[in-house]
Length: 457
Ligand SMILES: Cc1ncc(COP(=O)(O)O)c(C=O)c1O
Image (cartoon, rainbow, N blue to C red; front, side, top):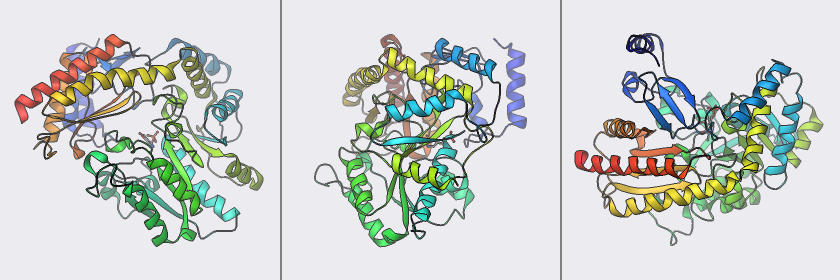
């Protein structure tokens, strides 16, 4: 553990030299777990020696915890075999095998893989590929990208900021790129159309059809969407919504890109969340857990039809020097094998049931728990000052910080990621979490909500 002096020195360095790329200022350094010294299994230890059950799991990348031995062994063996090669020029065996494996676990006719480094590369690649596909098909006028707001997050490059739905991430970089057209994301707890299920008959999905008609389908390349809107604080789509979106896209000849960078690989209780919602996208973007938390690897996974068109035209230009390192693919394959051997798809569903039962009781009893939402091990708990009006707390940043401090007392990292949208505790629980650990997380949330109620209502 760092001595007090070392910890203070690191904090001073962070304040003097470091700029967070996630919009976090100096105050963030006060949060437990703000600078991590070590991580092992389900726990991270910060420079103050605080050991925390990590509900963030590196934004879900470490879905099997930190340093899973089977994963580390595969990583190290492959790293020793080929320390570095650029997949921009040539692939390695694990990368090819990972592509084959993905084709076997992804839904429908999804088959070909274009590898890259970050999730942003994969989503941006998807947009490039939809445009290129339509050009090759002789329909060059189809270039527009339809995307959901608010929330849906697709990455940090200029085009992916243009396709994403966070005002606070868009406005500093305006003017954004042309041809990106927003439509409303569903949010049954705070419906943008002030309607409610089932009377609304999925008005939000049907709005897409109107946007497509208005923009002219002959100008539209694709719709890009998350399934569960993680960027809005884990908001799953209403039943039937994604199917209807998919149906509308195929009716109008618009490709559908599902961004499963964060939900992909078992976390939702299915290999991919799209399966749960009963549709097959034309392109599926996968990142984070694809390397089992070992480094930057991502995939733009294509339907057989689109992939064949690209292979035949031999002119795809979307690759990166480090975009598809073999040892990361080996680690990802070991992660997938671990999921299969330990039946972790089922475990993700158990985690949802366990947490749903405990937090469902809390939601019924607590005057500040407005909504509990989950898709497998990815979960959000929305706190409000007044349940009747759904009003937010006066200073969501302070409430967020208080919740993290209470979490620390329980040895749990509790995080409200986007206080811009209120106080939503967001969690990406490891699929290997034990019931005792889940109970500990629930205890910490119960205590935090009780104390928020006493202090801020
Ligand atoms: C849904 C989604 N898409 C894209 C990205 C971008 O991925 P990366 O940070 O690896 O570029 C993220 C990252 O959080 C994400 O959650």
